[in-house]
Image (tube, rainbow, N blue to C red; front, side, top):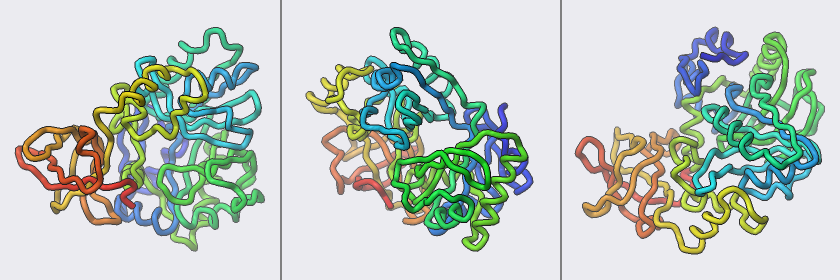
Length: 362
């Protein structure tokens, strides 16, 4: 089991700790997931996401390498800009979704999912031949906090001379916050205004930053928030979760990630297969749906039906704290992917009525 630098802080706050991607992580704090969810939607919450992985790519061929292994067009990035992207296998299946940071002209950083660090790093190593680049796994050096919610900017602005209001969505800067050097990034996985803070340092440094953020956010009733509400927040926005909604058996087009798959940039891993899929059309699509039933949660791999015919399966589901209804995402045959299409979700031999809706839910 691995532990983030904030582990003892979570335990002191009474967090319920669980194993996640090899780390002991807080799933929720004593006030509960719904309270934490609403804190992020209405004010501000702080996630420890130190378990995420970071790779640094540097050298004369850094851009060429990033272009080969990711689907988005990294040539559009400049130092200070971030891009949502994905890595694909040669058969078009998704290795992982990730963030790409252009730190300098010839230096990039990948931020990858915690459960995929080793797999992603090995895939990058497999693809590094013939490129004059250096690849470093710096995951164990980086601490990462996500401060998310409408009052996140007001909270953090007290602690930095960087003008956060001037920062555009999916941009970052090297700056100081609470007198600690870090990357301040206007990104997040909640759909709210928010920032992610990447920094190095020991426990004293980490605790200093944590305490400073919570002092600054006291007037906004800032809350520590766990992985439980991270999942409900991303689901309400229709954001994909690797291992649930996307994996090596899904391609970016059917997953609704065509917007980060830039075939026009030239060849990249899986581009020929993805181009063929795009031309021929997909057989299934990832859709969102809302259930009418009370006290029902659509779970991963539940079957989806229409008029007695099996048409797909659920990938993610939960109760939306904002809508007060069960919501979910899943793959359905393309003929059933239009909004307003009526479907049924099977659970333990019972069928629960649902309707396909346009994403996001909230």
